[in-house]
Length: 223
Image (tube, rainbow, N blue to C red; front, side, top):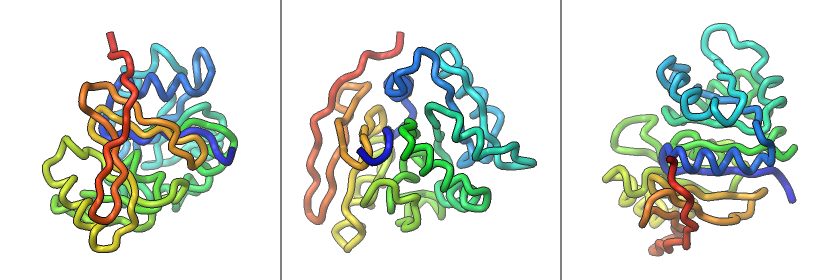
């Protein structure tokens, strides 16, 4: 197997976050939260502590201001969680600080990488993003840990599905999409399964003129 786990979520889902942390096989995993896409906003960071700290030792790895050994802290984590926001800005800032290489090294060492929206787009070669405006645009310089393209919020934002379908029909690399409350679980670069926290939410394989819904395994909902 090349690489650890990647859980690419269409949107934020607490049951799917719990699923991702369970992949570490640690009773209390060390989780690095990378809130770069949201500008390291305090509210978003507080939300991650609220969702995760009962089950994990959580620390936010901030890159704005004066970063504190971000690559070392990523290397020490069992899992890295990447919230949503601006994909293009996030990738640029990661590259300035060497976080892109640190994430690849962690993944190749068996870590779990998980995130939604921008935090799912980033793992693929290409994605569909609102980083440049509300009309949605193709982005071609993802981290490339996973081949092809990705589109989040497939059933949650009106423009996502038609825009992604049109781009792929026009020659954009084919790939996968995920509804809100669904995620694609990769082991190495192999799609292991689709998981869902809501009836009807699933993932898709999207190729020119073709959209194939994928069977999803239902997860227990948060209590």
